[in-house]
Length: 238
Length: 361
Image (tube, rainbow over all chains, first blue to last red):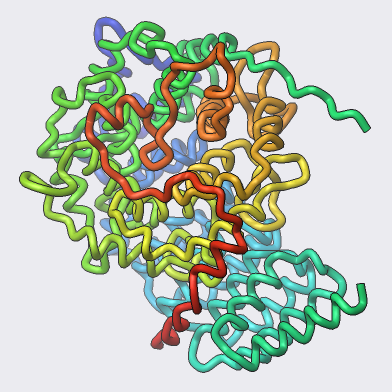
């Protein structure tokens, strides 16, 4: 790597009797050697930013690499407003390849925190695309909740959820998200029970729908009556 | 249709597997998990204890202790491996390792406690590290770490607000009785373990909606006998731990089919090379090996067989061998085993609490 000719790499030092000696594949070993030197020197620069990108490609779960990357980004962003926008595009690629990785989702959150409310609409679109790939991705759903709680944009959620529940009425993540939407402001508990039981005829074993209906029935007499009426009818028919 | 007998338990192969994995340093998986090696070592060490073996003898106790100590930073926190930044997750794993190896006094306990306490936020939650991610996993890690350090209560206690910690966990309780990673996040078995575990350590199980939650947990059992982590997901051996430990804490393990679960765990063993995998036929790893063994321990599977009596049991709250929990005097609140039915327990609970107020814009 020509960019780091001036840096003396620090090899892995596991001591005289290594307990867990690590024999890295060669390229990763080389990059980690440079990274260890950078950790020692404290350098944060464009070339270190690039180094972290190379390392993430080898191991997206290495959280210290992500820390250093963010430190470089924050410093560079002071002088160049495009840095964070470019990073959003980069982070989108990494998230697509590593959808279940904690670090990349936290990285996106840190970026949205830095950029501010303007990033929220595009972030909701990004999360929707991730959920198209895996409609139950836990990180994606909790990130979506965070964006909504922090920057709003709840108005689009009912339509979004209708699409997802149509695709898979058993999607527990979608049912939970519907509850979060319903819990904002006044809810019509009877209507929510009606919605849940409307999904049951085709999916009587749908745990999510039952738990959802039960939550409203437990605290509202009219909703409870509606659920009991449905259960009585189902039992009478069986 | 005659049921197939479950496969034999191949404990010796599991011990050999754990030792092999710890030494196979050129494997790609070993290399790329160096950021979480601390947790891997904890799983291996604890699994070996459940197999009634001595991890110090099997893996080299002094070397392991020195490596663990080398991962403690000046801040007091431990990283996942050498050269990795400190984090609550790996601070807990490190303390668990040191506790099992009898070497807690060799780390800087005061600094470790200060590191943990420094991560608590005004709302009672805990950051995972200086970067500020909040997750109920970290609530569990913090309370357990401080308890292990002997600094959760009493003289010398670290300055954290246990009531606030419990209140934050309670704010993550969902309409289905389960818990998520943050307020409003979907109930997930792993998060349920962290939340109920934290409440058990804080001695605030009064905040748990026990019948509703245990119903949700019991519904995790699939036709295969295994448990899943959320409705409509696949069974995975690790949920034998995350779910079963919570049911054990809440005196509710009799509300699942324990024999079917034990059979499922046994079928997840690799009968040729040892280790346990997430589901039958898949590749084993140390994570699932530990949790499968923990599940069998909690099911009383070893206790029921004379060839396995006398071995350490796993503690449901601290996920440590019970002899370590006794030695350290670790306290928790749990519901004792009982024979009440779920319906009787639910009827006895009384009227539901009022719903939470609507979220403010």
